[in-house]
Length: 405
Image (cartoon, rainbow, N blue to C red; front, side, top):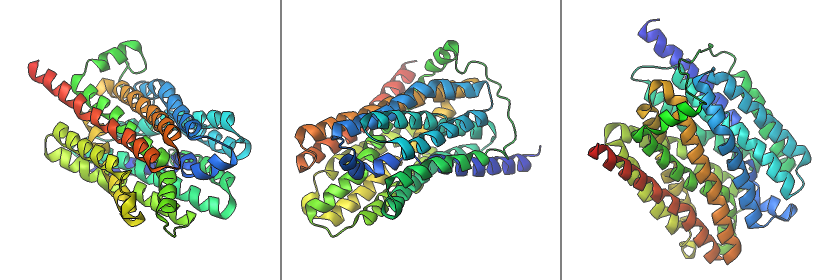
């Protein structure tokens, strides 16, 4: 195959995989977008909301090492298809049977397995089908498209909530992943060359890659902040509107939240372009420090009114995502070819640990200080933002070790 033909085939694969990711993430933000309504209808405390979000990432953490690691041994497209099937079941189950805290734990857990089998396996499927100088940009595009999927999820949930009720929102979150599965059919089969993925030896070998592990640890810090913020985004905007007396209806809140999530796409692409032209670790560290600072400030500006609060939330949404593609591309580039699946499995595990702890810790603070108080929200948002500080520490530690080596 000529270089031009290979590049065209890579772009075609990227198109199908990005589209499948967007549809496959239809349930990713459904629960978070409906937190105000589900809290009231199902009598859920903020700590219970935190647990429901946490179990989603706990399931993700349990499933990801196996599912992503398997992509070193079998076609990642097949793994992604299995993840979409779990998302289908989780969405339909939530629509039909969600009736309280325990059932929410079950269906969100299955949803976590679905995302574990969809996101990173899709990135591996793309990596397996691309090569050359354009590969990093396609990887960054795929990673950034995650924001489109989550934005679609939040927007669709808000739209269907107003029009048909919250069960319709969950129904859509199950049907769209089924459609995503059809987009995997045109992809050509691929036989991976690696043999270590999913095995103890493969994981040990991946752990010895210092630079890749530095980015993987930074990804864990990134996910603490990202998923903590997304868990409470809609609920915080609802609180901010009520607290400041803004005349904003529920549909508008859903639209604002969707815009916050959508801005993550260009932010992530810009962040990776900057990281490709400058020292990647320094750029990522600077992004994370700026994000931590703004996230802490977000909970302290309600006296300035809803308009400024919303503007800062939009900017924070950009900063939360600006390091996303830069981190993941750094991990992929630093990993050995035969260990990319195992390396991404470790990164996914670390990310899911951060993602599951942040909602729990911030939810506890909200309940402790009062979910209807400014102090509660200020503490919760500061807790979420503080996670980003661990990323620069991890990258600095690894960089220092590399210089000594």
